[in-house]
Amino acid sequence: MSVLLETSAGDIVIDLLVDYAPKLCENFLKLCKLKYYNFSPIHSIQPNYSFQTGDPLGPLSPHSDGGTSVWGLLSGSPADKTFPAFFHPKLKHRERGTVSMATVPDPKDPDVRLAASQFLITLGDNTESLDGRAAVFGKVAEGFDTLEKINNAIVDEKGHPLVDIRIKHTFVLDDPYPDPVELGFREPSKSPEPTKEQLATVRIAEDEELVDAEADEKAAEEAERRKREREAAAQALTLEMIGDLPFAEVKPPENVLFVCKLNPVTTDEDLELIFSRFGKILSCEVIRDRKTGDSLQYAFIEFEDKKSCEEAYFKMDGVLIDDRRIHVDFSQSVARLSEVWRREENEKRRRAAAKKAGGSGGGWGGIKELEKWRKYRNEEVEEDEGRGYRMVHDVEEFRRKGEKERKERSRSRSRSRRERSKERSPPRRRSRTPRRGSRSPRRDRGRDRDRYGRDRDRERDRDNRNPDRDRERDRNHDRDRGYHRRDRSRDRGRDRDRERYRRDDRR
Image (cartoon, helix red, strand yellow):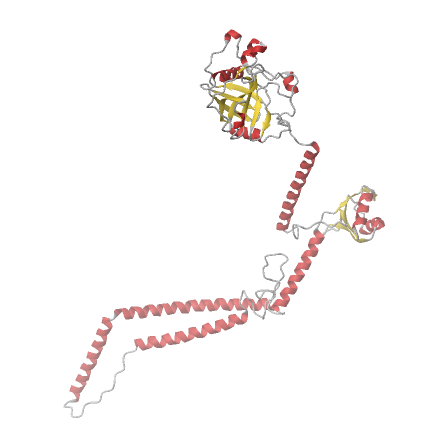
């Protein structure tokens, strides 16, 4: 047996203990069916302890009668308004979410306590002090987050919430008791509208915002200001990235006026004469077309101090000059600041590059007006010690390295030629003199021929036994020829690099 309470703080599902408190459960179920609890305020909120509800008008209404039971509601008899509450010995207030009927002592019998329609729900554990004063008849099954919201509500000294928390609707999920039709019980087809007495008890409705109008306006203005600042910072960063601003944090000068809607015949001298009565003018320039020299009908006037600039702004806006009504505003241009900053930075870089190069070899890497990359804008260019370069090779180093490599290549080529000629040349034969006492010179020549043939056959056999030697020798020869070809192409590339460096130095 369950009942769903729909409150302005959330939904609460209550399981009824019909076996332990049947009459209390029947009274609660029938009142929920009759929509008696609709728009009842939640009051007497004690954080981490309990809250109370069930009176349709609440304790703040002078017309409140404290609530009535379902039998008193149906019969209209004051005697049936309350009924004796039953306290089961096993039902205690031991846990959060315990539902119990509020009771008062019977004037006739102090040992008997009477219940009507109001009930309590505990907001914390160990609330045994309610035992004997409130009769337990159910427990919260769902909606503990709603209990937490009620527990954290802002209340006054009497426990009444500052913003109204009320029961909107009640839904009976299961009712085991028959309806007392004989008493005129009739379930309404829809929830009734709040009465005038109930509406009069509203303090601050749930849909009203607890925000001061002035504070809300200030908060909106502050949020709009922060939004504009973020947008301006993003736009300035974009302009810095594309090179229109020297850096994103730059601000326009406060002593420069922007004058527009000028007559094309108005000159710099005319404007300077007219605006000079407000203070000393450092510069006055009418912007003109670069090609034709015609006036673009706007100008910038720079004063010596900010005060003179502000005075001219307030008094010269809308003044008639040369039959034209001009418009004056503070300048938002940083073009001149950007130009000055770039000029100073470029000059600083040129000086650093000149010191570093020592008057020869260019700024960085042998190229003039080239400097080392810097990560941060304000980082000073550090000077290298010595005349050489750190990241590239100079011309002398290229020349020394090339000469050394050529010498090594020529030495290796001569060595390889000697080795190849030595391997390919036949072995030297010793001259043999005929023996003394030889019988026949023809026989000696034949013997020498046979010996030479045997040596040649022996050498051929030795070569046949080692065929890998010839293949290795041929591979070495081919590799040497490839190395020589790559060395010659590398030499030609280095010669072209040295010639390009010489031409850059002459420039």
